[in-house]
Length: 206
Image (spheres, rainbow, N blue to C red):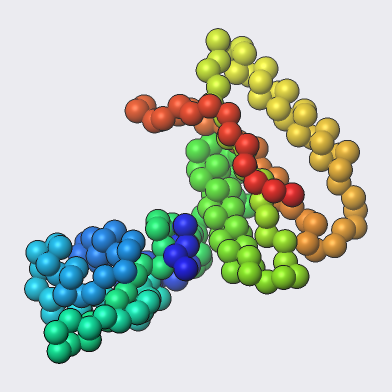
């Protein structure tokens, strides 16, 4: 089964995926295909395509899903393991961003580090999804807001901080089972120029 978002956790796997030809191959292998069929589609020699497929398969980015007989030959059908990909900061080892090493908590660098930590931790939940004794459900809230003024923006930040502190104080208990310890993040940043401004979206589970 193809994963909606496949997280790459190792540097070697990231290197394999970022090769320009292999990026094209991964984008074309959302559905099963053979090396010969893929070569015809992207206009590249079959031997070259087959080499790159083998490299991707060796790194776990492409999987064998079946075979088909074409004339007197049997073609291997392969498929990418993900519909889309994210490279986890874990692939960088000690170079990965760490929020504990950044003093300015209002800086873009701090937010990037916090999001990096979240990617690493949430990626681990994907491996627990099929285990019956695990509860990997998450909660995601997204909203886009246009502020009338800088004063309104500051007031929103203060009220959000106060409300989050109130909820944490209300529901936090000093001792809880490991499966009920959650990390809650609240952040806000200017939408980049040309970015899509979507409305409120609430998705997830308990």
